[in-house]
Length: 80
Image 1 (cartoon, rainbow, N blue to C red):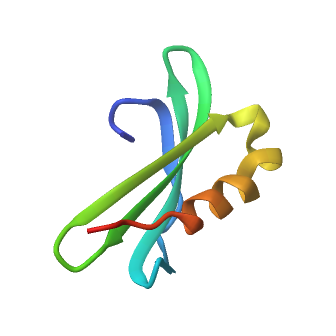
Image 2 (cartoon, rainbow, N blue to C red; image 1 turned 90 degrees about the vertical axis):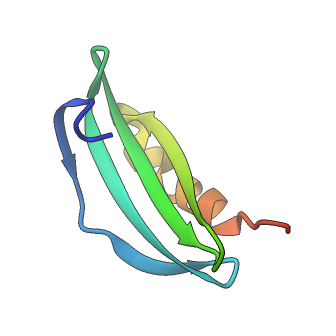
């Protein structure tokens, strides 16, 4: 994702648990098609598979939406 955006950067991944599974989460910021955006990129290891969760918003709304996107991401679970 970072390679596809202009002026892209990312934070160091942070370890966390989602639905009892280890996960890592990082913020990716950049410009895509002329729009400044921020992705909250989360990878979850459910034992058999890895799952990616992508949540995004406009960079201008990141401060307002940051916590909500983290709460939604943290509340997700999978069913087998």
